[in-house]
Amino acid sequence: MTTMTIRCDEEDKAAAAAVAEYYGLDLSSVTRAFWKQMARTNSIPLDFGTREPNAVSLRSIREADEIVAAGGAGESFSSGRELLDAARS
Image (cartoon, rainbow, N blue to C red; front, top):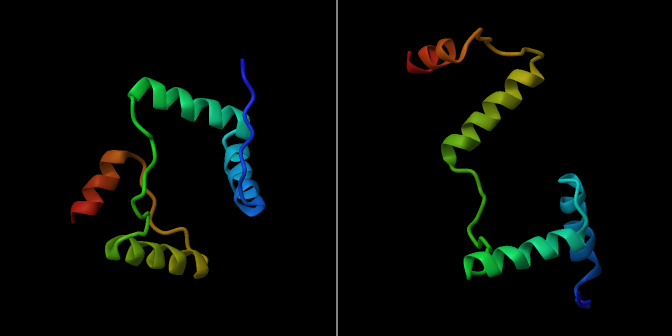
C-alpha cells in the first residue's frame, strides 16, 4: 500500500467530495476506483463531452416545469404499454 498527496483547488475538492458523498463514497475510494479502472481498461476513463440538453429535451423540461407550476401532475398511466401508446398518438 502506498500514500499519495494530490494538490487541487479547495473548491474543486469540495465539489468532488459532494458528488462522491451523493453516491455514498469518499474521495479516496473514488480515486482508487478511478485508478483501478485505468489499469483494467488501459485507458483514462474521462468524458470531456458536454452534458447540455438538446432542444427537444429543453422543451420537455419547460413543459414539465409548467405542469408542476400549475399544480397538475400531468396525465398518469397504469402501465408502460399505456404510456408508449399515448406517446405514439
